[in-house]
Length: 267
Image (cartoon, rainbow, N blue to C red; front, side, top):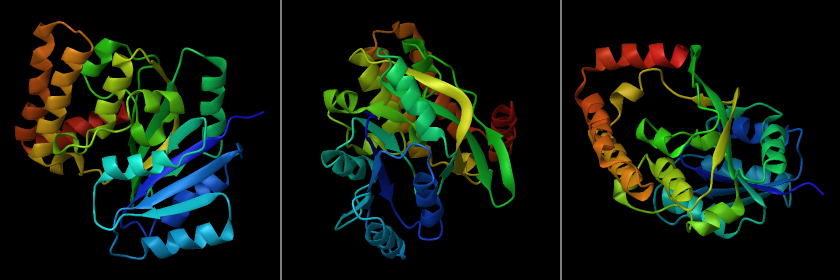
């Protein structure tokens, strides 16, 4: 019997793109799934769009609502509490994915009992088309966390037991925009391991200049998670120099960062 997937989605002001994202799930070749959406107090028609899918596909879609804006960490934890699946997948309300994404991710988890996290490479696209993609490491090690988050969060699928072992996402202002990075650190510290499918089965809607506009406080949050990783994963303290990298990126002139980011994304 095929394992059930619970797709958890924190949705917020994505009325213009949510339907496309949900249609990607409906069209999956792997059909044993449920979608749990939690609206984080949207001010547009996101809730109305989500409710149409709940009504059209009874038993497949569930909509939760926050009474105020709480952020992604809190919102995804709310989804996790009602998830019935053996595997937990992510999807964002403004992205797209290949029709065989779930099938290929399930295959990895089914065939590798020692793997609890699976993700894929991602394409980046905006209104002008695809402008880059990630190039992930196939089997990230503890040392991989020194460079950056080793898994694409929105494209991931994780064994439910791994989420339960670390009590889901940690909620803190220090983890805004780096909640996934911290989640993987917690899982690796507990002995869980992951694998990347080195094929872009997920497409992230991302303004090609967005990375250069990232707020400095989020750079500080990234530095904080690197520090946590060094301690939690028992890495040599000399690696603390990696904590400076996000800060240096934050003070790099935007035109320089844009050039480097695009070049790296295309390689």
